[in-house]
Image 1 (cartoon, rainbow, N blue to C red):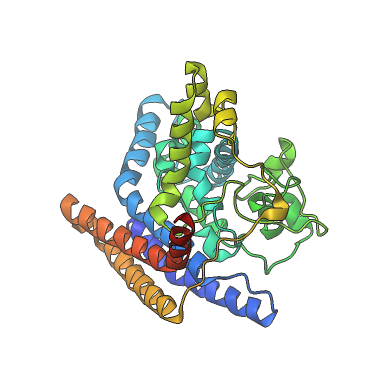
Image 2: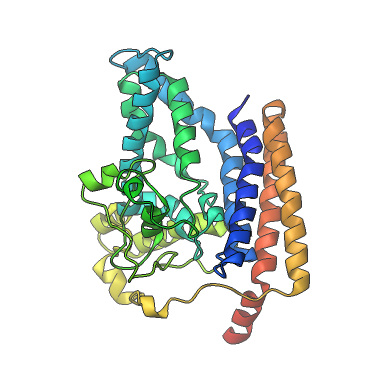
Amino acid sequence: MTGPQIIVLATPVFLLLIGIEYLVGRRRNKNTYRLNDAMNSIGLGIMSQLIGVFVTLLTIGIYTLEFTQLSFWKLPADSVWVWVAGLVAYDFCYYWKHRAGHTVALIWASHVVHHQSEDYNLSTALRQPSSGWLGDWLFYLPMALLGFPPLVFAVVALVDLLYQYWVHTQQIGKLGWFDRWFCAPSNHRVHHAVNDKYLDRNYGGIFIVWDRLFGSFQQEDDAVPCVYGTRGPLRSWNPVWANLHNYADLARDSWRATSWGDKLRVWFKHPGWRPADVALKWPKPAFDIRQVERFDPPMSPGAQVLSAAAFVALLGATALFLWNAHRLSLTEQLASVATVVLGLCFVGWLSERKARADASVFSR
């Protein structure tokens, strides 16, 4: 069974849990879902899986090449301890990859997609970037050097990813001793918050102990409610722009910078850093959490029905494609992906038509 086929089989479980979380939230008068946001988050997950069809073999191939040619030794794939150690090693590498994703602008430009939602629920977990493959694989190469077989690497990577699904919820409170050792909903809510107290904290995937060891842990404070999203909000439901807008911002600042050193530093400094001359000539307003306003353009009942129907059709088309992708020619794969992506852009357009119309009137 291929990786995409595993995702297809897991998707009904993801959607069932989303439905349960929604019903629980409604019953508690604590609903955390909006149709437009949930469709956008799941749509970005769809795009990530579609792109993965083309790049997963590349990243696994690089890992396999290093394992074959450069590993210090070859660990046995039939030993339980290798699998357990592989999961711990993967999560350790993930911690540093995740931390770099919040401290290096170029890596944040990809990871930011996962943080763009101004809601926090299980659909947020599915909100994944399409460009992570450009550099994420670098952080796992130490595992290849240490001799973890490609099969072990691929499986523990999937386990680590699936584990993180359930922590994206506001319906589960603090879990006592569990929170001290593992990434749990309370810990991960902190990670997604933009409050000063919470910013750039709690990077662990499965184990939160890495954050405690390396000084990046912050406990959720009931007196400081989490505010979700990013400090440079997307304010769009277009999934393509969601993946590209931070790269565009970096390229613009790099182009405008006078110093060649600053042109390079833009990409590798902390996210939000700007050359002094660029910041002076093209200033951006300082972040003020008191002025945070969720992007939520109203949708007519007709637009809601049409966008939801189109989205369900796109979910079905994606499942059909992922299940059969290995049987299709490259041309057929590209045509299928382009069709689904255009469909997702259409859903995004329907979801923000009112915002576009208002902006057009305002600009006249």
